[in-house]
Image: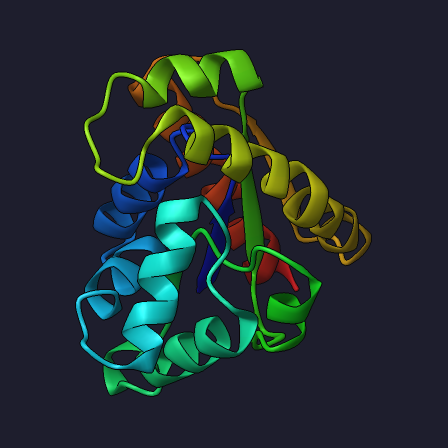
Length: 184
């Protein structure tokens, strides 16, 4: 099984992706973590990632696509994975494998997202960077939801509930999807 979790900054998508990965015993691919690790590299890519992250901008598409492909070439991902926070735009979607089972969109309002983000302490979470990331999300990532819906892969989740309630909802939807596969 291959699942994607999308949602704006502070939507809880990473929390839900990790919970589902643990529940299904699938490896979790966290693009944000990959980028934070690569930003420590003292090369051109590391510098480009550092600059973009600190400005609240997206990592350049060529770097993002390359980083994901490198990660997914590892044999541990052969039988499936949970992908957190990717793709972020049409160019990244074009570089993504097409055999994704479902895309979980964890939906929260911008007000709720900013409230949640102000509670965590990360050096790249300045108010300006957070607002910029939400703006980019609305402009570049939200349009992808239409494509996933057209493909019959989109599952919209109300992210403004308790973590456990959201996780239960997602597990039920995965179980229903598995039943559909068994019937076909």
